[in-house]
Image (cartoon, rainbow, N blue to C red; front, side):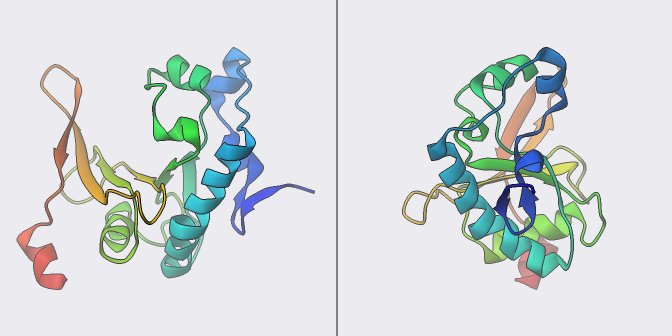
Length: 165
C-alpha cells in the first residue's frame, strides 16, 4: 500500500527524482516538510485537479537541499521546504496556460510562475503555497535572456485575459 500526500499525489510522485536516483541522493522530507506538502496539495493542487477534471502531472515537488544543489537550484528554494511544486499538462485535460489562469484567478498562492514556453503556453507551471496570512500572490514569468540566464518578470495578463476576468 502506498502513502499519499493528498487524494491524488502519492508519496512516490511527491519525492521522486531521476537525478536523486542517479546520484544516490536520499530525497526524504522531514515531518515539517510533509505538513507543508499536504497544505499545498490540499489548497492548490486538489482544487485545480477538480476543476481540470482529471490527472495533472507533478514533475517536481519535494527536493532536499542536496538534490537542489545537484540540479543547480538554490538551497533556499521553496521545493526544499515542501512548499512548491511544478506541474505540467501531460495528460491534456487542460493546457498549462488554462491551469495557470485558473490558479491566478481562483486560488490563493504564494508564488505562481509561467515557466518558459511562449505567449500561448508555458512549458510548465511552478506553484507555491505558504499560508493564507503569508502568501504573497506573486505572479512571475520565467524566460531566458540572450546569454541563456533565467530571468523573471512580473506577470501581467494580456488585454484579452483582462477582458475575460
